Image 1 (tube, rainbow, N blue to C red):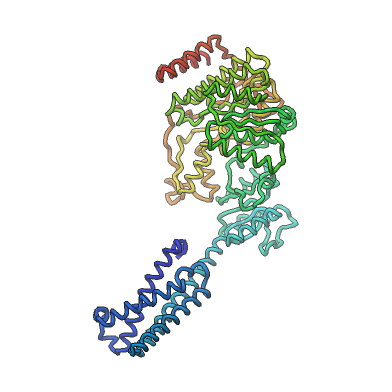
Image 2: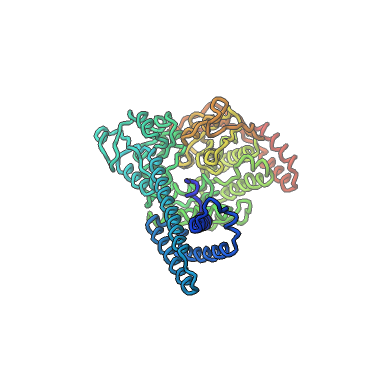
Length: 618
């Protein structure tokens, strides 16, 4: 019945029309048997094939169907509820009875059979609708009872807002939990507030399946501690965003409360916002790859530092449209006067790029544009070399000649360290190229910022796992021992800004990514946080299976952030710098050879030459 209630209304109407056919002919047959007093002797087949009876029955039924349709009995059954539907059904039956009676009087064939027919038909039809209505109400009440297996952690203003939001969705939470002893065991919105010590008891009493954490004032460490407490009970977890996120949403219903793994992995990372602001204040800033994951976050954060102009470059029309739209919206809402310039261009078009830079005169460059999906880059070697190496080199060379530019920050990756895939190799080549340029041009402050994976970036493993869980699994993991570094995207960008703008220039900066996380453990935690269980040999009736696909070409078991363990401290505990002596006097000549092989379409020779170069220099 729950499945039937979820069917399209047109299909439900058709089902009821079919039921009407059955009721009609059944009631007609019953009355026929009763009228002729031959209930036991008469067979259904004899009745159906009596020409005069069957013809009259069909004509009468078509007339009956017209009135059912005319009064929209079946169409509004599930939409308007029982009383309106019952009223329409009675009107349809009365109209049918009066019409048939009038016709039979005109032709002089009125019979007691018709009266009995009207009564039985109306009775069966009305009873059907009443039972259907009662059944629907029962199921709704049942589903509301099932929806009561939700707890709200936090009985403050945010918790009561969530309560009202759930009520609008026909869900009634079972209870509140709050750490404030003044609220405990009081009633708010007619549901009781308990201590977190009562959590296990409440889960058992109310068959709790989901907990909503509604304390937006929590800092990252407090959120992490609370999540770990709740996760031990294998419940689905939803988390209200922090205060600033709430301020950015005028409509509470638009807030995404889906649990993010960054809530567990994130640390209390701090960066000097005031010093960053001093460096960006009234400056013109250019961001390449502005519509990408890191680029768009750079745009958002930089925009709030009172820049004079922000120049957004991307070769994807869709990505550029999204970020420009967002920044324009922020500009209106926050009443910020920063000029926004959008440039739909490819860094590989050197002439166009040079014209743009000369036209807009940026002072600070953040270079985040790159093809960075390992598998896609591996399948598109030549295109990736063109974009990642030639495009980046174009930008560096143009900026080298521009006297207006004060800072150039290259966004790099941990995959550039002893690279095993082509994406990492292209990023390593540009790291080396920029380091060489930095030795020659002391007017520009250069910086390379290297870090690992970020949550919610395009291609991040977390949304992939989330989609796999929602579709019923399985989750695909390359190998059980594979480890990766993770950081939230806003933390990474904050540290990029501090590294590139406020610290000693002409260095490779490495962000403190914390401890590496096993991807298998990440998958297990995600299954648990959705309130599900792992399906394996020990638990064959579990919800989600994890399967191992093996390492892809160029994929490492463990990633590194530096060629050396000798990481130098900076004033920020989450930023280090490394000294890597890999300067090549023949670098320009070597890259020219790479370019010639690219333009000659000699893929294998290009790959071989790059491998030889990196082996020697690293």
